[in-house]
Length: 89
Image (cartoon, rainbow, N blue to C red; front, side, top):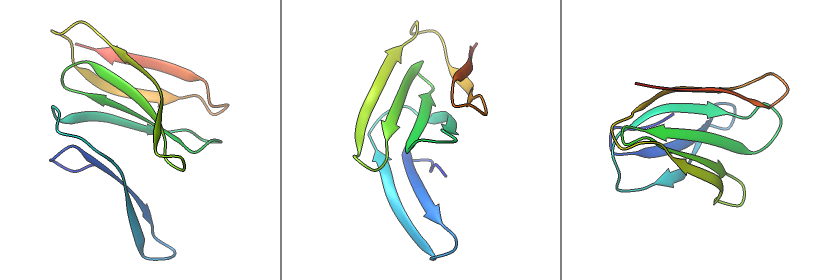
């Protein structure tokens, strides 16, 4: 889940446990997608910044900045774990 202050939190409902994955002072997060087979989460924000984090190692796997007038609103992985689309407005 993500919060209004740009934190992304992993929640393990079975163990009633939560862990902060990412906390950065940046524009609001608009899109989050979890990889189906790897410990990775893709995060897109209001400024057009897309980052993929390894939540076990707590490090950036890759990142990309889209044009400053763009917002990332939706991201997803295919069921095989390949990136499908990044939609910007």
